[in-house]
Image (tube, rainbow, N blue to C red; front, side):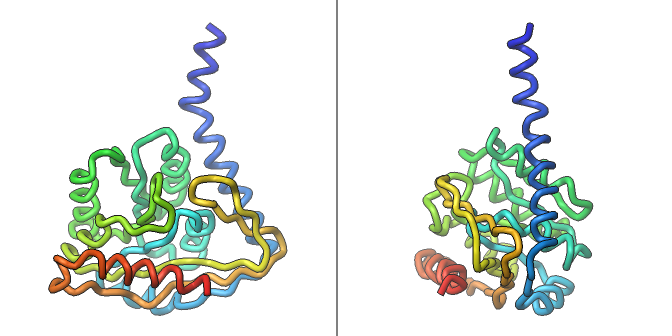
Length: 219
């Protein structure tokens, strides 16, 4: 019986404990930091009139919920998260915000995932948050789903990133980064990218364009 209760705790309560603990810690951490925002006005003005997607590397996930909640909470954001144990805390964290939603899809069902992503943008008018190298890598490589979704929905893709003077980097597959307390953080909403339908057969070129737009923040 004790073993059964232990399994139930891990499956049902541990993800909630992890998600809400992370939320509180990141919120407290940011209060100690000097945060500078770049490109936020362009993002807001574009999102008010046109479909948008926010694209970031998996290693930069830590800050985006609090940044959006504090500075652009007028929109509904849907995080594209795999339906797995690893994705459970992320989904709980996303939905803990009033403007947050989680789109859960099996990581091995790409067709279903793509259809749901497109529907969320087209019919619901939500801003999709997507990590094109998630949920399991390869690290910092663009998968084709974001390209097809952007072409189908004519969405603007906003590259999102942040840089901190001082941070921790975890020994995970994505090399997750966490800023240290009392550091300076620059948060970037890059210029919107619109993919040309004429490039439908040239996914490699589009992938390179998107990858460069994210990596340019690290220069």
